[in-house]
Image 1: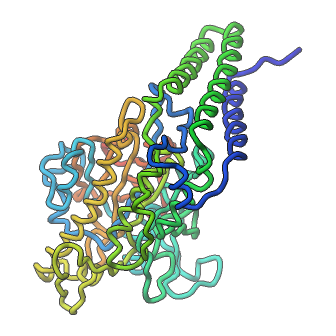
Image 2: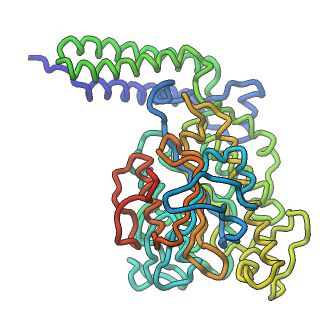
Length: 486
């Protein structure tokens, strides 16, 4: 007897047909580097990307995660909004540092008062390794191979990589690691340079050159022209017709309950068909030509004077990768622990700290010594917040199904320290977007009186992305997510 098809078989047909379709088109594409790619697209091109079928309107939202990092702590007096509680309160007036988020205040959650205390090692190093992993740093004698000075690494994977592994294969890149500042002094190892880990003792240092990052992310897509886009839509329509026919035939042989589930899946397929017909609802626009001017004239990505431009360019490339659905998990690390950038683009000559230094890290140690350092550091904090606000408000302008790209993206803004002077308690976090994840919107949380570890926040972030977590990392013996969150 010929076996009947089951639901998984029908779903597999759709998935396999998509893979076959992508393979057939990839043979037609040719590799072009950045300038050739931008020239080939042309100023009026639609852009060479067609969103995946799963972005259908009215379907379950595609959820994304973005981790953003600023170094050296913050001036909490100017960062923390007033009035927060462990249960969360409506977010009132934004602080001096976070004022640039005003336009999307209703889509923020500000979280302060969480602890990240760990034994041993420099707190910059511990904070860098533990921020997204919730894990302690392993000393050299516990490492699997001999390591030099300052080479301790985190004992667990980071939350973004836990999500990436659980959703492996959903997009071209399971995750992307963007970095900007990677200038290190004193022989600091990767444990000081990155907070992203694919597993215990497996740091993932991001690409700090935006020109190379663009080439990597958009490589292989330059050959898709308007004719191929039309062909791709036609092929996808054919796939959908085949699947709909099979599902319809299967429905007649099923019981009432299974038929209801099957009809719901069939309606989902029909919604994809409607989306392919109407180009106006294809999804967030995806056009690499937007970055042509910024990419044409290459600059030294590590020069201090170029730092603001590199931050913006990496942010724009990261946003484009999300809009093109090339990845749904990425990290955007603006610098590294003990970063010594000199912020002379803030409109005045950086003041000297008590030791005669003008760099960010040295000033951070004077956070409570002089008003000059406190004001300068607050200006740096505000500048970093403005970069994250640019990312969040930009994503909020793009429609993504029935919501905006920000609604379906959880942006987590964190730091390896609470403030300069090597403190890991009362950590500052800001979460923008994430309505689709169940992240509270327009809320202010202050956990200072609860002795809550930041691992609880990592659990909630993972749950928001669909992971069935009860705990995360090695530094918290308690279980459960953050009170009032997902």
